[in-house]
View: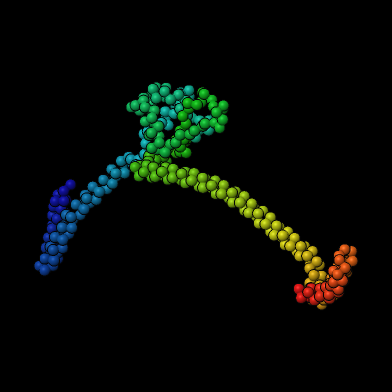
Length: 321
């Protein structure tokens, strides 16, 4: 319906009513005012249908938008790779690949058969390395089950390959939307983390070597300190023994030195007595010698006189000497 088609009959009816009323009751001025009012009403009636049509168009668009099916938000869309992998492990032959007993990881028992017969059913390749690389991009990691002793190695399970992700579990498909693919920045961060881990390992090795060296030096220092302590103890004991020996020797020599020190002053006082006694002894021996000697008579008298002179002169010579 157009606005002009609706406005024409309304305007015609309003004009007729105004004319009929003006002819019977209204003055010319009132008729003019009434005509203006009718024109205003006609213009309002002509614009109203246009507004309602615009409102109808708007409401119809809203209804159409409401009827459209809502698309799944991007953040809740599950990657096709994860869906295929979950479906593949869930329906695969247990002799080739299956869930673990706990259901928190899956095991590829036969890599060759898995790559040749299972992967082509879900992907456009049969490369197990590419499949493992994609798992790595989504945060999966390999689990190693190497035993401690080499004798405990089971040749049947030695070739098994296990993959683990905390959100990839048996009978829990609702967790898959929490698995995110690593971006380039995440990969760079992962590489940086790996490099930092390597550096930390190197630092730990260096610290271990330094600790070993420190322990070795500490033990050597303790040995040297023990030897030095023993040496100092022995030298101190030897010094004490020497001091004791010196003290004992001094004590032993003191009594012998004391009489000598006391007899020294008496020497000058007793010297004349000693000289006198010696002269007497010498005179007596000379007399005995003269008496026994055989000499002439003349000489005998002289020798008899000489002893007295010799006896008288010998003390003086001894004193002089």
